[in-house]
Image (cartoon, rainbow, N blue to C red; front, side, top):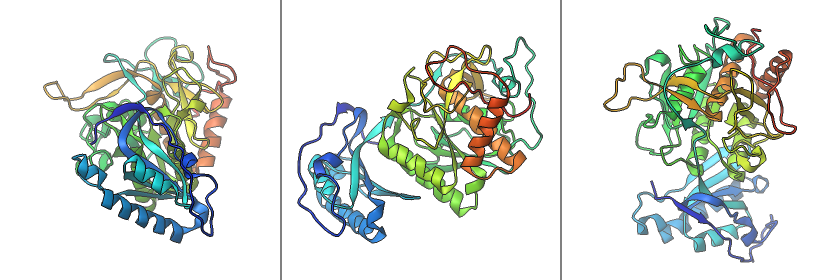
Length: 421
Protein backbone atom coordinates (compact mmCIF):
# COMPACT_ATOMS: atom_id res chain seq x y z
CA UNK A 1 0.00 0.00 0.00
CA UNK A 2 1.56 3.35 -0.96
CA UNK A 3 2.27 5.90 1.73
CA UNK A 4 -0.33 8.58 2.34
CA UNK A 5 0.10 12.32 2.16
CA UNK A 6 -1.97 15.31 3.18
CA UNK A 7 -1.87 17.76 0.34
CA UNK A 8 -4.10 19.96 -1.73
CA UNK A 9 -3.61 18.81 -5.30
CA UNK A 10 -3.65 21.93 -7.48
CA UNK A 11 -4.77 21.65 -11.09
CA UNK A 12 -2.35 22.87 -13.76
CA UNK A 13 -4.11 24.84 -16.49
CA UNK A 14 -3.62 23.01 -19.78
CA UNK A 15 -5.81 22.89 -22.87
CA UNK A 16 -6.77 19.97 -25.07
CA UNK A 17 -6.19 19.90 -28.81
CA UNK A 18 -7.83 16.49 -29.33
CA UNK A 19 -11.01 16.15 -31.38
CA UNK A 20 -13.10 13.22 -32.58
CA UNK A 21 -16.72 12.26 -33.19
CA UNK A 22 -17.44 12.96 -29.50
CA UNK A 23 -15.65 16.25 -28.82
CA UNK A 24 -14.65 16.89 -25.22
CA UNK A 25 -17.06 19.15 -23.38
CA UNK A 26 -14.35 21.01 -21.49
CA UNK A 27 -10.57 21.58 -21.55
CA UNK A 28 -8.30 18.91 -20.10
CA UNK A 29 -7.37 21.21 -17.24
CA UNK A 30 -10.96 21.41 -16.05
CA UNK A 31 -11.40 17.64 -16.10
CA UNK A 32 -8.86 17.16 -13.31
CA UNK A 33 -10.55 17.62 -9.96
CA UNK A 34 -8.80 19.04 -6.91
CA UNK A 35 -9.24 17.41 -3.50
CA UNK A 36 -8.48 18.92 -0.11
CA UNK A 37 -7.60 16.11 2.28
CA UNK A 38 -5.64 12.91 2.56
CA UNK A 39 -4.76 11.26 -0.75
CA UNK A 40 -2.72 8.37 -2.13
CA UNK A 41 0.25 9.82 -4.05
CA UNK A 42 0.14 9.39 -7.85
CA UNK A 43 -3.15 7.48 -7.58
CA UNK A 44 -6.12 8.60 -9.70
CA UNK A 45 -9.71 7.71 -10.57
CA UNK A 46 -10.72 8.21 -14.23
CA UNK A 47 -14.43 8.47 -15.07
CA UNK A 48 -15.40 8.01 -18.73
CA UNK A 49 -18.30 9.56 -20.63
CA UNK A 50 -20.82 6.77 -21.08
CA UNK A 51 -22.25 8.38 -24.22
CA UNK A 52 -19.08 7.73 -26.25
CA UNK A 53 -19.82 3.99 -26.18
CA UNK A 54 -17.98 0.82 -25.16
CA UNK A 55 -15.59 0.82 -28.11
CA UNK A 56 -14.26 4.31 -27.42
CA UNK A 57 -14.01 3.63 -23.68
CA UNK A 58 -12.08 0.38 -24.18
CA UNK A 59 -9.76 2.12 -26.64
CA UNK A 60 -9.14 4.88 -24.10
CA UNK A 61 -8.48 2.33 -21.33
CA UNK A 62 -6.01 0.47 -23.56
CA UNK A 63 -4.22 3.72 -24.38
CA UNK A 64 -4.11 4.57 -20.69
CA UNK A 65 -2.59 1.20 -19.76
CA UNK A 66 0.03 1.49 -22.51
CA UNK A 67 1.04 5.01 -21.50
CA UNK A 68 1.37 4.13 -17.82
CA UNK A 69 3.38 0.97 -18.50
CA UNK A 70 5.87 3.10 -20.39
CA UNK A 71 6.08 5.63 -17.58
CA UNK A 72 6.11 2.88 -14.92
CA UNK A 73 5.49 5.33 -12.09
CA UNK A 74 4.86 2.79 -9.33
CA UNK A 75 7.94 0.75 -10.19
CA UNK A 76 10.10 3.87 -10.02
CA UNK A 77 8.56 4.63 -6.65
CA UNK A 78 9.36 1.14 -5.37
CA UNK A 79 5.73 -0.03 -5.29
CA UNK A 80 4.44 -3.32 -6.60
CA UNK A 81 2.09 -3.56 -9.55
CA UNK A 82 1.12 -0.98 -12.15
CA UNK A 83 -1.90 -2.58 -13.81
CA UNK A 84 -5.06 -0.43 -13.76
CA UNK A 85 -8.31 -1.56 -12.12
CA UNK A 86 -11.51 -1.19 -14.13
CA UNK A 87 -15.07 -0.30 -13.07
CA UNK A 88 -18.26 -0.93 -15.05
CA UNK A 89 -21.60 -0.72 -13.22
CA UNK A 90 -24.84 0.61 -14.73
CA UNK A 91 -23.31 3.48 -16.70
CA UNK A 92 -20.34 4.09 -14.40
CA UNK A 93 -17.24 3.39 -16.48
CA UNK A 94 -13.96 4.09 -14.74
CA UNK A 95 -10.35 3.14 -14.20
CA UNK A 96 -8.04 3.38 -11.20
CA UNK A 97 -4.48 4.16 -12.26
CA UNK A 98 -1.11 5.20 -10.88
CA UNK A 99 0.59 8.01 -12.78
CA UNK A 100 2.46 11.27 -12.33
CA UNK A 101 0.82 14.63 -13.04
CA UNK A 102 2.27 14.83 -16.55
CA UNK A 103 0.67 11.50 -17.44
CA UNK A 104 -2.64 12.53 -15.89
CA UNK A 105 -2.78 15.72 -17.93
CA UNK A 106 -2.09 13.72 -21.06
CA UNK A 107 -4.89 11.29 -20.17
CA UNK A 108 -7.31 14.13 -19.46
CA UNK A 109 -6.98 15.33 -23.07
CA UNK A 110 -8.76 12.18 -24.26
CA UNK A 111 -12.32 13.16 -25.35
CA UNK A 112 -13.67 9.93 -23.81
CA UNK A 113 -12.66 11.10 -20.31
CA UNK A 114 -15.33 12.84 -18.24
CA UNK A 115 -13.15 13.71 -15.24
CA UNK A 116 -10.09 12.56 -13.26
CA UNK A 117 -9.94 12.86 -9.48
CA UNK A 118 -7.19 12.13 -6.94
CA UNK A 119 -7.57 8.91 -4.95
CA UNK A 120 -8.72 10.21 -1.56
CA UNK A 121 -8.63 8.32 1.72
CA UNK A 122 -11.99 8.20 3.51
CA UNK A 123 -11.89 7.82 7.31
CA UNK A 124 -14.11 5.31 9.07
CA UNK A 125 -17.25 6.91 10.49
CA UNK A 126 -17.03 5.77 14.13
CA UNK A 127 -15.40 6.63 17.44
CA UNK A 128 -14.43 3.76 19.76
CA UNK A 129 -14.97 4.47 23.44
CA UNK A 130 -15.25 1.61 25.92
CA UNK A 131 -16.95 -1.79 26.23
CA UNK A 132 -20.49 -3.03 27.12
CA UNK A 133 -24.30 -1.93 26.91
CA UNK A 134 -27.17 -1.81 24.26
CA UNK A 135 -30.82 -0.61 23.96
CA UNK A 136 -30.62 0.21 20.24
CA UNK A 137 -32.50 -2.92 19.21
CA UNK A 138 -35.28 -2.04 21.64
CA UNK A 139 -35.58 1.40 20.08
CA UNK A 140 -36.02 0.23 16.48
CA UNK A 141 -38.86 -2.13 17.42
CA UNK A 142 -40.81 0.30 19.61
CA UNK A 143 -42.53 3.61 18.97
CA UNK A 144 -40.80 5.37 21.87
CA UNK A 145 -37.39 5.25 23.58
CA UNK A 146 -36.98 2.76 26.44
CA UNK A 147 -37.54 4.14 29.94
CA UNK A 148 -35.55 1.50 31.81
CA UNK A 149 -34.22 -2.06 31.47
CA UNK A 150 -34.91 -4.78 30.62
CA UNK A 151 -34.87 -3.94 26.93
CA UNK A 152 -36.84 -6.04 24.46
CA UNK A 153 -36.31 -6.45 20.73
CA UNK A 154 -39.49 -7.59 18.96
CA UNK A 155 -39.18 -9.06 15.46
CA UNK A 156 -40.56 -11.64 13.05
CA UNK A 157 -38.80 -15.01 13.12
CA UNK A 158 -37.86 -14.70 9.42
CA UNK A 159 -35.13 -12.36 10.71
CA UNK A 160 -33.54 -11.60 7.34
CA UNK A 161 -33.24 -15.20 6.18
CA UNK A 162 -32.32 -15.42 2.50
CA UNK A 163 -30.87 -11.90 2.36
CA UNK A 164 -27.16 -11.17 1.89
CA UNK A 165 -25.47 -8.15 3.48
CA UNK A 166 -22.19 -6.98 1.95
CA UNK A 167 -20.10 -5.13 4.53
CA UNK A 168 -17.63 -2.83 2.76
CA UNK A 169 -15.36 -1.95 5.65
CA UNK A 170 -12.24 -3.22 7.48
CA UNK A 171 -13.19 -6.87 6.99
CA UNK A 172 -15.04 -9.20 9.35
CA UNK A 173 -13.86 -11.54 12.10
CA UNK A 174 -15.95 -14.30 10.52
CA UNK A 175 -15.32 -16.81 13.32
CA UNK A 176 -16.93 -14.62 15.97
CA UNK A 177 -19.60 -16.76 17.71
CA UNK A 178 -22.25 -14.07 17.18
CA UNK A 179 -22.18 -14.69 13.42
CA UNK A 180 -23.14 -18.37 13.90
CA UNK A 181 -21.34 -19.45 10.73
CA UNK A 182 -23.23 -16.97 8.50
CA UNK A 183 -20.25 -14.72 7.72
CA UNK A 184 -17.77 -15.42 4.93
CA UNK A 185 -14.82 -13.80 3.23
CA UNK A 186 -15.63 -12.07 -0.04
CA UNK A 187 -12.94 -9.79 -1.43
CA UNK A 188 -9.99 -7.70 -0.28
CA UNK A 189 -9.55 -4.48 -2.25
CA UNK A 190 -7.00 -3.10 0.21
CA UNK A 191 -4.59 -6.05 0.20
CA UNK A 192 -5.72 -8.03 -2.89
CA UNK A 193 -3.66 -11.13 -2.08
CA UNK A 194 -4.99 -11.55 1.47
CA UNK A 195 -8.30 -12.65 2.99
CA UNK A 196 -10.52 -9.73 4.09
CA UNK A 197 -10.00 -10.42 7.77
CA UNK A 198 -10.60 -7.65 10.28
CA UNK A 199 -7.55 -6.24 12.08
CA UNK A 200 -9.29 -3.19 13.50
CA UNK A 201 -12.77 -4.21 14.71
CA UNK A 202 -14.84 -1.63 12.86
CA UNK A 203 -16.15 -3.99 10.19
CA UNK A 204 -16.93 -6.77 12.67
CA UNK A 205 -18.82 -4.32 14.87
CA UNK A 206 -20.87 -3.03 11.93
CA UNK A 207 -21.59 -6.58 10.73
CA UNK A 208 -22.70 -7.62 14.21
CA UNK A 209 -25.15 -4.73 14.53
CA UNK A 210 -26.64 -5.63 11.16
CA UNK A 211 -26.86 -9.40 11.55
CA UNK A 212 -25.33 -10.74 14.77
CA UNK A 213 -27.32 -13.36 16.68
CA UNK A 214 -27.09 -11.40 19.95
CA UNK A 215 -26.49 -7.83 18.82
CA UNK A 216 -27.97 -7.80 15.34
CA UNK A 217 -31.18 -6.68 13.65
CA UNK A 218 -31.45 -9.31 10.88
CA UNK A 219 -30.28 -12.34 12.84
CA UNK A 220 -30.49 -14.87 9.99
CA UNK A 221 -29.03 -12.82 7.14
CA UNK A 222 -25.79 -13.85 5.44
CA UNK A 223 -22.74 -11.60 5.78
CA UNK A 224 -19.97 -11.06 3.22
CA UNK A 225 -16.72 -9.31 4.17
CA UNK A 226 -15.46 -6.87 1.54
CA UNK A 227 -12.32 -5.14 2.80
CA UNK A 228 -11.61 -1.60 1.59
CA UNK A 229 -10.11 -0.09 4.75
CA UNK A 230 -7.51 -0.52 7.45
CA UNK A 231 -6.42 1.68 10.35
CA UNK A 232 -5.24 4.36 7.89
CA UNK A 233 -8.67 4.72 6.33
CA UNK A 234 -10.29 3.75 3.03
CA UNK A 235 -8.76 4.78 -0.31
CA UNK A 236 -11.48 5.79 -2.75
CA UNK A 237 -9.94 3.41 -5.30
CA UNK A 238 -10.41 0.52 -2.85
CA UNK A 239 -14.01 1.56 -2.17
CA UNK A 240 -14.74 1.67 -5.91
CA UNK A 241 -13.11 -1.73 -6.41
CA UNK A 242 -15.11 -3.14 -3.49
CA UNK A 243 -18.36 -1.88 -4.96
CA UNK A 244 -17.44 -3.27 -8.37
CA UNK A 245 -16.72 -6.69 -6.83
CA UNK A 246 -19.93 -6.56 -4.80
CA UNK A 247 -21.99 -5.79 -7.90
CA UNK A 248 -20.30 -8.59 -9.85
CA UNK A 249 -20.69 -11.13 -7.04
CA UNK A 250 -24.36 -10.30 -6.46
CA UNK A 251 -25.03 -10.44 -10.20
CA UNK A 252 -23.19 -13.72 -10.76
CA UNK A 253 -25.05 -15.40 -7.91
CA UNK A 254 -28.53 -14.04 -8.62
CA UNK A 255 -28.56 -11.93 -5.45
CA UNK A 256 -29.01 -8.39 -6.78
CA UNK A 257 -32.61 -8.12 -5.54
CA UNK A 258 -31.89 -9.90 -2.25
CA UNK A 259 -28.81 -7.96 -1.16
CA UNK A 260 -28.02 -4.86 0.85
CA UNK A 261 -24.71 -3.02 1.04
CA UNK A 262 -23.51 -1.26 4.19
CA UNK A 263 -20.95 1.55 3.75
CA UNK A 264 -20.08 2.98 7.17
CA UNK A 265 -17.41 5.33 5.87
CA UNK A 266 -17.28 9.07 5.37
CA UNK A 267 -15.20 11.40 3.20
CA UNK A 268 -15.35 14.88 1.77
CA UNK A 269 -17.44 15.28 -1.38
CA UNK A 270 -16.12 12.98 -4.11
CA UNK A 271 -17.94 12.67 -7.43
CA UNK A 272 -16.53 9.26 -8.36
CA UNK A 273 -17.60 7.76 -5.03
CA UNK A 274 -21.13 9.13 -5.39
CA UNK A 275 -21.31 8.03 -9.03
CA UNK A 276 -20.42 4.44 -8.19
CA UNK A 277 -22.94 4.30 -5.34
CA UNK A 278 -25.62 5.62 -7.70
CA UNK A 279 -24.67 3.00 -10.28
CA UNK A 280 -25.11 0.15 -7.80
CA UNK A 281 -28.53 1.47 -6.84
CA UNK A 282 -29.42 1.70 -10.54
CA UNK A 283 -28.37 -1.94 -10.94
CA UNK A 284 -30.92 -2.92 -8.26
CA UNK A 285 -28.83 -3.13 -5.07
CA UNK A 286 -29.98 -1.21 -1.97
CA UNK A 287 -27.15 0.95 -0.61
CA UNK A 288 -26.93 2.21 3.00
CA UNK A 289 -24.37 4.88 3.85
CA UNK A 290 -23.34 6.69 7.02
CA UNK A 291 -24.20 10.39 7.25
CA UNK A 292 -20.81 11.02 8.89
CA UNK A 293 -19.56 12.26 12.25
CA UNK A 294 -18.61 15.88 11.52
CA UNK A 295 -21.77 17.69 12.72
CA UNK A 296 -21.91 19.11 9.20
CA UNK A 297 -24.24 19.13 6.20
CA UNK A 298 -24.09 15.81 4.34
CA UNK A 299 -24.01 17.77 1.08
CA UNK A 300 -20.30 18.27 1.79
CA UNK A 301 -19.55 14.56 2.17
CA UNK A 302 -19.44 11.31 0.21
CA UNK A 303 -20.95 8.81 -0.09
CA UNK A 304 -23.48 10.45 2.26
CA UNK A 305 -24.56 12.89 -0.47
CA UNK A 306 -25.26 10.20 -3.09
CA UNK A 307 -28.92 10.99 -3.92
CA UNK A 308 -30.29 7.45 -4.14
CA UNK A 309 -28.37 5.85 -1.30
CA UNK A 310 -30.19 5.66 2.03
CA UNK A 311 -28.21 8.03 4.24
CA UNK A 312 -28.42 7.39 7.98
CA UNK A 313 -27.90 9.84 10.83
CA UNK A 314 -27.43 8.94 14.50
CA UNK A 315 -29.57 9.48 17.60
CA UNK A 316 -29.44 8.39 21.22
CA UNK A 317 -31.72 5.39 21.74
CA UNK A 318 -32.61 6.72 25.20
CA UNK A 319 -34.10 10.10 24.26
CA UNK A 320 -34.23 10.35 20.44
CA UNK A 321 -31.89 13.35 20.45
CA UNK A 322 -29.64 13.84 17.45
CA UNK A 323 -26.15 12.69 18.35
CA UNK A 324 -23.89 15.71 18.75
CA UNK A 325 -21.50 14.38 16.10
CA UNK A 326 -24.07 13.29 13.50
CA UNK A 327 -24.15 15.05 10.15
CA UNK A 328 -27.45 16.56 9.07
CA UNK A 329 -29.15 18.25 6.12
CA UNK A 330 -31.64 17.52 3.37
CA UNK A 331 -29.55 14.56 2.21
CA UNK A 332 -30.22 12.56 5.40
CA UNK A 333 -33.04 10.06 4.86
CA UNK A 334 -33.53 8.55 8.31
CA UNK A 335 -32.02 8.28 11.81
CA UNK A 336 -31.20 5.27 14.00
CA UNK A 337 -29.40 4.58 17.29
CA UNK A 338 -25.71 5.41 17.12
CA UNK A 339 -24.68 6.27 20.70
CA UNK A 340 -23.18 3.70 23.10
CA UNK A 341 -23.88 0.77 20.76
CA UNK A 342 -22.46 -2.59 21.79
CA UNK A 343 -21.48 -5.17 19.20
CA UNK A 344 -18.87 -7.75 18.22
CA UNK A 345 -15.20 -6.88 17.85
CA UNK A 346 -12.22 -8.67 16.32
CA UNK A 347 -9.78 -11.27 17.54
CA UNK A 348 -7.21 -9.12 19.32
CA UNK A 349 -3.90 -10.79 20.13
CA UNK A 350 -3.39 -11.46 23.81
CA UNK A 351 -7.00 -10.75 24.79
CA UNK A 352 -9.75 -13.04 26.02
CA UNK A 353 -11.21 -13.63 22.58
CA UNK A 354 -14.01 -16.09 23.30
CA UNK A 355 -16.63 -13.42 22.54
CA UNK A 356 -14.88 -10.06 21.91
CA UNK A 357 -17.12 -6.97 22.01
CA UNK A 358 -16.74 -3.22 21.88
CA UNK A 359 -19.02 -0.24 22.43
CA UNK A 360 -18.98 2.53 19.84
CA UNK A 361 -20.53 5.87 18.96
CA UNK A 362 -21.05 6.90 15.36
CA UNK A 363 -23.19 6.99 12.27
CA UNK A 364 -21.23 3.83 11.45
CA UNK A 365 -23.35 2.12 14.10
CA UNK A 366 -26.61 3.81 13.08
CA UNK A 367 -26.28 2.69 9.46
CA UNK A 368 -26.30 -1.10 10.02
CA UNK A 369 -29.41 -0.71 12.18
CA UNK A 370 -31.23 0.58 9.08
CA UNK A 371 -29.53 -1.81 6.65
CA UNK A 372 -30.53 -4.60 9.04
CA UNK A 373 -34.16 -3.43 9.10
CA UNK A 374 -34.08 -3.39 5.29
CA UNK A 375 -32.75 -6.96 5.16
CA UNK A 376 -35.40 -7.98 7.69
CA UNK A 377 -38.22 -6.40 5.65
CA UNK A 378 -36.90 -7.82 2.39
CA UNK A 379 -37.13 -11.31 3.88
CA UNK A 380 -40.44 -10.77 5.66
CA UNK A 381 -42.32 -8.82 2.97
CA UNK A 382 -40.57 -9.76 -0.26
CA UNK A 383 -39.32 -6.26 -1.09
CA UNK A 384 -37.06 -6.55 -4.13
CA UNK A 385 -36.02 -3.08 -5.34
CA UNK A 386 -34.15 -0.19 -3.71
CA UNK A 387 -37.17 2.05 -4.31
CA UNK A 388 -39.53 -0.39 -2.56
CA UNK A 389 -37.12 -0.73 0.37
CA UNK A 390 -36.80 3.05 0.72
CA UNK A 391 -40.56 3.59 0.55
CA UNK A 392 -41.26 0.96 3.21
CA UNK A 393 -38.59 2.30 5.57
CA UNK A 394 -40.04 5.82 5.27
CA UNK A 395 -43.59 4.53 5.73
CA UNK A 396 -42.78 2.61 8.91
CA UNK A 397 -40.70 5.45 10.36
CA UNK A 398 -43.54 7.89 9.66
CA UNK A 399 -46.12 5.67 11.37
CA UNK A 400 -44.61 5.90 14.86
CA UNK A 401 -45.09 9.62 15.41
CA UNK A 402 -41.60 9.85 16.90
CA UNK A 403 -39.26 12.58 15.65
CA UNK A 404 -35.61 13.38 16.25
CA UNK A 405 -35.08 15.94 19.00
CA UNK A 406 -32.47 18.72 18.92
CA UNK A 407 -32.39 18.35 15.16
CA UNK A 408 -30.87 20.83 12.71
CA UNK A 409 -32.87 22.95 10.27
CA UNK A 410 -34.98 21.06 7.75
CA UNK A 411 -33.29 17.70 8.34
CA UNK A 412 -35.74 14.80 8.41
CA UNK A 413 -36.90 13.77 11.87
CA UNK A 414 -37.75 10.19 10.92
CA UNK A 415 -36.49 7.40 13.19
CA UNK A 416 -36.11 3.91 11.74
CA UNK A 417 -38.58 1.26 12.92
CA UNK A 418 -39.11 -2.38 11.95
CA UNK A 419 -42.91 -2.23 12.16
CA UNK A 420 -43.39 -3.78 15.61
CA UNK A 421 -44.70 -0.85 17.62
